[in-house]
Length: 293
Ligand code: ADP
Ligand code: MG
Image (tube, protein in one colour):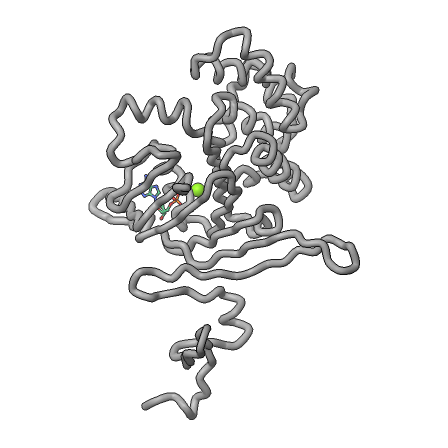
């Protein structure tokens, strides 16, 4: 099966007033259909740039990107419009971009459905289903200002899903929420994935996301560095346990970045000693006296 999202060596250079900023510096990411993935990184690491490209609001300077079978670099402007209306859903970082203030939540969803061309009769049933999946079934008649931050974000997700997108993108969906509300929103995104099968890609600076989704990818300087995969397993005592595994992306010329906490734990710095074993590679700190001249 071809991946639902595939970006290869994405580069995005912004030039403003003669100054060049490399927002993405050769980013490669694969997301399989039905996966929930979070990209985590500090402010300015290129997260919003990545989502702008994947949602076809921006084009990369170099590299390739396909989403749900659409090649984002060769689409005509008509295909772009169709793609944004039918293939992908978007929860924006700026909360006010997600919901129309004067309309109720149900009216917001209905508007999104109308733009996507859904028949009037089908709109009501689809609204109901979405409100229920997102756990805000009793809030359909409220306006955004009458909702808490977490409820607003869940309503925003409902609106983004109205047109039944194959892929949902969310930019900092918990940026302005406390921990309890953040958990509700991540829970809602997992439920959307489970109930509707939507592929979900979240970008956030919230490191806590790695406890909330199965796969977390770290972005640094416009490039992906390491990945954490978590899975729930039932232990011998019958208790559910969470297991995490760390991965690093190995680029085409063999470079990889070690997780920062690994570097700190062994004081790895400058020159490290590599040892090739039969089926793995060891990385050792180098004692000062054994460093070559
Ligand atoms: P993040 O979402 O991770 O905070 P962004 O993708 O917004 O990061 O930005 C990555 C880098 O690109 C930053 O250095 C930012 O200042 C720069 N950048 C983003 N958008 C623009 C733009 N439209 N013009 C110039 N520079 C930009
Ligand atoms: Mg951003």
